[in-house]
Image 1 (cartoon, rainbow, N blue to C red):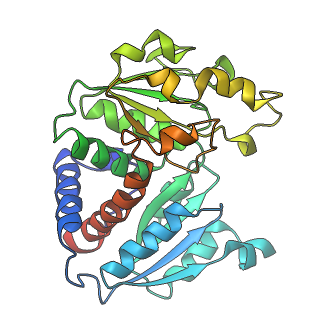
Image 2 (tube, rainbow, N blue to C red; image 1 turned 60 degrees about the vertical axis):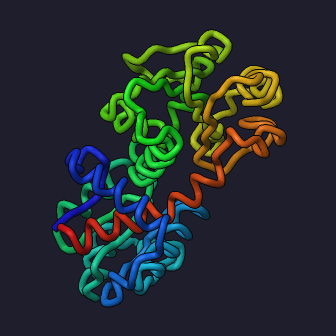
Length: 292
């Protein structure tokens, strides 16, 4: 039984297969490969892009999808996560797609070996499908040649499971990752760290901007996020005419993370990431439910 708890559970061959399948699916919609499969989505945290992307991916492959709202489930009545999962598995789904605030929740469920578990984001540690779709977007942009490219991750890195998963995957694929953030947003890391983008702007090939995750901070870090934006917003003044790919996992706080004008710039691939997310998640479902 194959799970996707983090990209570290995937072999190099599997990662290359995912990239190949996503590219193939983007060129031509595949047949209903999963028309006899049933998936359950279990999102304990709010999600727009990830949940809808998984549902679209599953339905494009012919699978049925059932969404359980944890806010109306027995977990609100004191039932444990494990018992909720076991009861769902008694209905014999082919996979459960879970988002949870605890880092180890997807791993705990995967270890129960009751059905395939796909991590759709957990705590501040892992969001493997986002890392994979970001990798796909970069591989596509650079025509497969990402080894040695430098990506600057900018923003609330310490709170970001996107950054955490991305760092592990991008370095594994031969990219150089540097971190740019004010001190309260910077995690402990052996990677090169800077407080301003201007220090390294001429050395980077990709900028990944992150949202300031206010909901994960016990108290406000900044009194005024316009002050933060003056130093970290990705805009034309900061980038000039440099040939730098701009990414963001969404949702974007306009004119704080990325300026309105930059969101319309051809170097910014935010909507392309959303599009590629469907194809990558189709590839992931194929890998876990058919190929393993």
